[in-house]
Length: 245
Length: 164
Figure 1: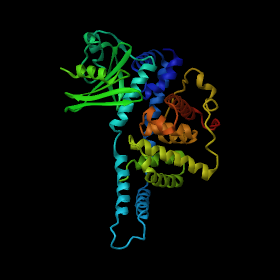
Figure 2 (figure 1 turned 180 degrees about the horizontal axis):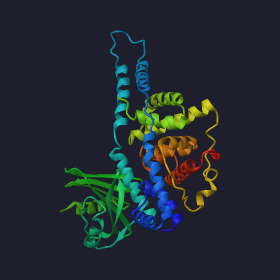
Figure 3 (figure 1 turned 90 degrees about the vertical axis):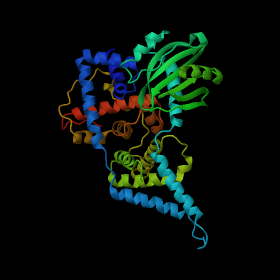
Figure 4 (figure 1 turned 180 degrees about the vertical axis):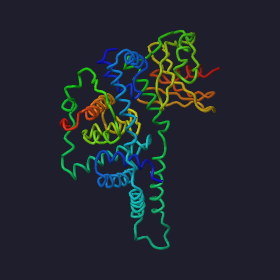
């Protein structure tokens, strides 16, 4: 990697948004080039100081906004209500206010994860970055993941059933690194994302998004997401094989 | 009880650069969030709230302080000629929070915005892209320029400040 490329990719690298192969190239360059290493260090220094610049919201403001929200929810309760009428609308408005606050607490749901998975699939096809380790040999792909992930993903080839393992890749989903296995059936590419989750099983769930079929499931402490433009029946066949012991 | 309040305030404070404005913007943004709650289609509540805070900020600034800050951002206009040169080799001797605060205040709003969302709130490129309504690639190049500009602010000797 040249100095120019290093500068171009430096930010993606700092933000952990750069793919694995480029990250390794960039690290190698930093090791050999003092000028780029100095730049990298400077970026790290500035970054480290930034969180301290966060402004804390004044307590009074917090109180007054809270009061304004309650006020707004009360306004929606019309005054023509008779004393004996039950304030349903007030309750509904208050419920809406609570629902807002509750929703804002919620972390991105599996709905957004689904989007993330599909985006990742599309990106892998577009960016010419389908594979970090192109191999049809499961004994090459599996060790490749060792040391790059904090778990050892099950890697198997299903060529006999028409699903050829064509390689693997490190990807990033739901804020952690995941294994992406790439299978091919005829002309269709299938990405299988895997990462460990607290044990417990979840049955198959099928979605369709942006013209892609998505199947998710949890088996024996591993969450699996399969994405492809392959039809859902055949995708399910692969899902069955992937999770089978 | 008031989720993401500090984060919302922080963004408003950095975008408006004035605490009185930030107060008003945050209050208005939360009321808007309440009003437009119907339009929330699920997903990440924090990103949704940031979008509202950001839009409220820009509307507010335009209304209150004229067009001062919000000339349409031009990627080519705002990229300095140095963008294509070899890496700067000035060492950052000392970087204290005050210097960075001052440097950050001087950057255009679009640069401040991506830096706040990325470095203080830890959002991904994709989340920032959604909030600011630009492509992921634009987020990356904007962050890159923002960091370079900030670095320049920190290395310019006192009294010789460039036109930021």
